[in-house]
Amino acid sequence: MECTKKATETVTSMAYQTWPMITESIEKIEKKLDQNNDQEWNQEDQMKASLAVNKIFLATPYVEIWEKLTKGLHTKYAKVLINRLMKKVIPSLEQKRTSKLLFHQILEEWSLFDTYTRNVLIIFMPVEEMGRNPMVLDFNPLPLRVFAKLLFCSRVWTEFHHEIDNLLPEMIDAGMFTKKDGKDDEDIERIRLLHFFYEMYQMQYTQIGELLQTTFNILKEKKIVS
Image (cartoon, rainbow, N blue to C red; front, side, top):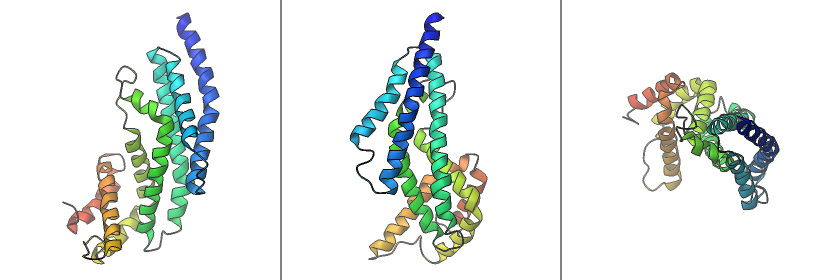
């Protein structure tokens, strides 16, 4: 019991010391992506952040402490992504709410958010690894990238589902989902659209499912998906 108490104190201390590094790493990621600053979030930064989080788990052999760490870091991961969505993604889409370019902006923001997520995952990968261990958690959490996709889908469809569903038939009738021979640029846009809906398809079976099913019903009626 005394050993567990000491281990908890050690890990708690390490976690508090690591928290500022995680915050600093997130800031570096944002500077790299938002300001095109390649000097930020370089390989050395990535290695330091990843090792710092891994060392917290290696500091103790106790599963109950791993469980608390995993849940705490998962909460931090969720807050980081939600903050990005609310400060960057949603305001950007809001500017296009009444525009026919809304969907183009959604595709752009999804691509940027996915890149952001992949960089953030470098820091939080131990959470994914521990989450797969049934000895650590008594439930099976979503893979972290799928969880990020769920957050994006939930926020975007909650805010813009009326605009999406109104715009979609116009896009289909305008041929934006139709293969175009000899027009590579337009076909790339079609592929991006199809890939985006493929990514969102599995989110139908989550808490945001009802809104998404309405969207996919439009695609099914227009024979874009089966």
